[in-house]
Amino acid sequence: MPFDATQPVTVSRTPALPFGDFLRALLPALDGHGVRCCVLRNYEGFPEQNLGHDVDLLIRSADLPRAVAALRSVDGIRIVGATVRAGGPSLFLEGVSAEDGVRALQVDFITSLNWKGMPHLQTEAILEAAIPRHAGNMSFLVPAPAHEAIISLLSSLLVGGWVKEKYLPSVRQRFINDRAEVVAALRQNFGLKAAERLADAVESGERAQMLECVGLLRASLTLRAVGREPLGSCRSIIRHYAREAAIRYSPRTLETVTIVSLDGRRAFSLVDRLLPMLHSTAKAVAKRPLGPAFAADAAPAADGSFARLAGVLRRLAEEWRDQCAETKSLTLHLRARASRELPISELGKGEFGNWRLARLAAKVSPESELWILLDPSAAGLPSANPKPPRDEMARLREASRAFVMSQRRFVILDARRHDAELAEEAYAAIVEALARRADRELNKRI
Image (cartoon, rainbow, N blue to C red; front, side, top):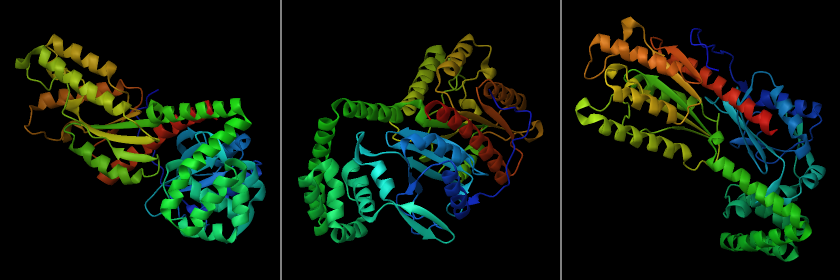
């Protein structure tokens, strides 16, 4: 259902919840819902500082629905994005400020530490060996030192084939100090030979030696997993690739918001304001580039209907190419458009070809999650260059309004407002649309 364009957008003036207050609300809520969780890393600045870009919480797979319920119980936040991988979901929360100027935070509920669906450390073993850590007036569980070193190393080395320099000094020191515990933990899923070879490479501090271990680690993990549980491991591997394909290529991982103004300039300005405001509401927030206009009225009548059709088809191909391009994570695209770029034909409705092209483009264009029209009053129409007759501009305005109101989700904002106020209203509309979509995805998948 579309938004009610006759009512003003509700803009919440409540400031974002400070990171420390969020933690002090979330951790007791998880405990109250019976969820045992472990903060995997980057907790040294807790409760006031978040040294990472997100918060990684290890939980049991069976506890995931209760963990999401606990998260939803925290006042003042909304889940505005969700992407589910084999290792658990990444959730994007609006209403939490972990750094100045940012209103959202990513929280990962990790249920499995795996490569291609095959666990390299058992979740139950990590949770059982977790140790308490006190920070200020709160306490939480963190992995045992040997487990934390392995997690910090393998999250990049095994999965991505590279060494994360940020963690290497502490990982190397832990491998040296707790070698027996590290080798014992690695041995369960990699075997003694691979575990000792990796331990030797980390202790030496030589990156090249660590990278040489990647092939052996992956082969050992695969052989031992398939040897222990052939059918279960094969199912896990297939499930992993199926989920990754869905994340990379499914429209569920791409959310597009289209902002329209008469000449496009106000829309482009608003997109630039919104980009930093929407940081962390998705894995990636980006301005979506657009090629030349493909409106049915863009081509002069002298070019004939074939030229207009070719222009429409070219632009539609570009739209679908961008829509189907590889997306490795949840992405929010913001795009700005001028009214003349829309598939409308009010200015040339005497030409039958224009009507057909407009209908074709409207039906087969990729769908936006939300359309936002910046609609000026009749007395405040912005000028275009070259300036069209006033009655022509009025018809363009009405045609734009009619087209946007025909979309599945839309909101119409008063373009006479100041830029800052307009940005807040657009932000509120986008957050509302993202939250509705995230709720649908979570209800289907968790």
